[in-house]
Length: 120
Image (cartoon, rainbow, N blue to C red; front, side, top):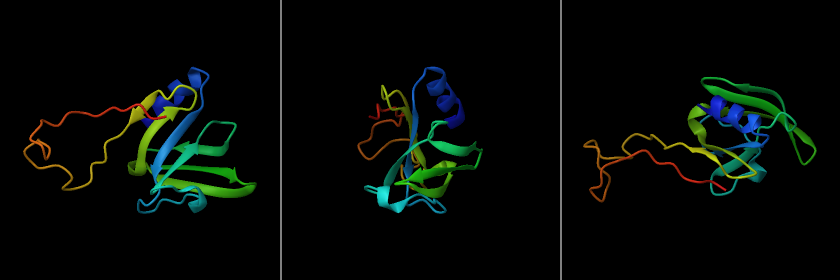
């Protein structure tokens, strides 16, 4: 899904960005850009080298403040993918164990539904 949305964003002449859970196990991101446990990564072809949007990992090389850094993020750590120019994209629900009651309702008794938010 991430690969498809990223391609769609590029096809529309926009810049794809990822919001990543920087504290996810195995995530290698530049820590100086982490805010509230999250980091925003520009994955446009002009910003990264050797972008690999795999089924399990997203990897690429990029420069942060002029220093080269190899980014590696498990796909499960991606919280959203969106276009910088218009904010269109998709947010992904965190499927952490025990995050929802097993009967399909949330804490307020409402039925769980897919969540899509506009991320700017």
